[in-house]
Length: 557
Image: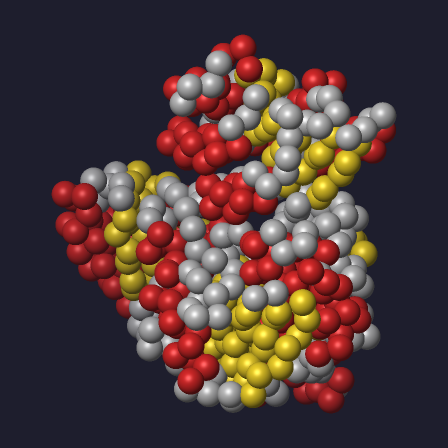
């Protein structure tokens, strides 16, 4: 039995809405129950001795391990991690010092970390019904144009704050397996058409008024808090990735709406999530962040979303590509709110009143209606916009004016035509995403077809084989496999992932002579362009160095 990870939980998580400390421990299935029982006894003993009698313990079993959680005050979470680790070590008799000595050490740590001013400000924020956001160095109240931020070591007394200047802005969360970043950008376009200053955080960075202010993956708590603290922002659109929710919990409470785009296989194995059911439970953490009157937006074409919505207390807006979807029809018959596709028309219905929004062929990212997954993204975005009272006109204009260009939506269904060569560049990186993209890609007429693929080292061999199995639907004439940067090795040796890809393609019947390996995506793309002739189709699944790839494509003649 070994500790795999010890971390703070700062917001709603799989376990609870409380803050606390989490341990992930490797343990066999046979020994898991015994470990949990002994840890719970030890944890309770520690919590009581430290005066944390009201705090709770919870656990979760998964394949190969368990997660052990204890709640704790928000101003003592680093110390709480030490408490949890000590309880675990005592439970397996791995300590050679006395219990009293350990309690003395932990009390000293807690005393050094406790900050009554943080708790006082949090209570005051709750009293005034405004958001409270805590980071290591910054504490803030309110959000966006109504936010006040303070250095953690210079927090004012509540009586010193002008509470009339503090307020919340409309905030929506977006999660799911695929389509998150595209939906974030669709919402930005809609809000811009409505004359609203939007702030957005996603895997592409932080954007204010559709301009990038921070590059990188900001789909975790840091990106959400930074966006909410920007005093220019009038409405916040926050992508919340699975990893961030599992690692820290939700970054914010009392949001207006949350969308789950879809639920599919992706990153199995991380933090004990090994099945679609566990993935669904993870994505549904977002509903714990909704305000009392907040709206949950769900995909009626997704079986897991339907299952996990049962007995949900939240107001739900459903969307579907099928006007005859049973979940959709039942919801509409009960007077519910929904958006769906009827032929080529997008229909919005509320309390049995139906309104035609627009034809899908008027929306560039649907590529004339054949990019079904992007139609689904548009339906979800419409539901989100309606949940925060956006009128039809900016919704329509926002969808009409949002294109597949790299500038609008980098790495998402970016189409280029060069010298009679069709090129489709996308970020698809899991079987569900690649499958959806191939529905579109197989429609391109081509004399020859090439696919470029890459993957990070934290994907299992089985995951990579599944990607290859899905990609063979394209029936490629040529395959280019690219290495990703050193940061993406994640425990693998250089070249190891590429070899797994190559072996998988060969096992499915592709001739080894049709497979080429490259040290990075730009070189793989350049070679693809050099190979291509008029009438060919290139599907480039580019997961890193996208700006360099775009430059290579632009310069190709």
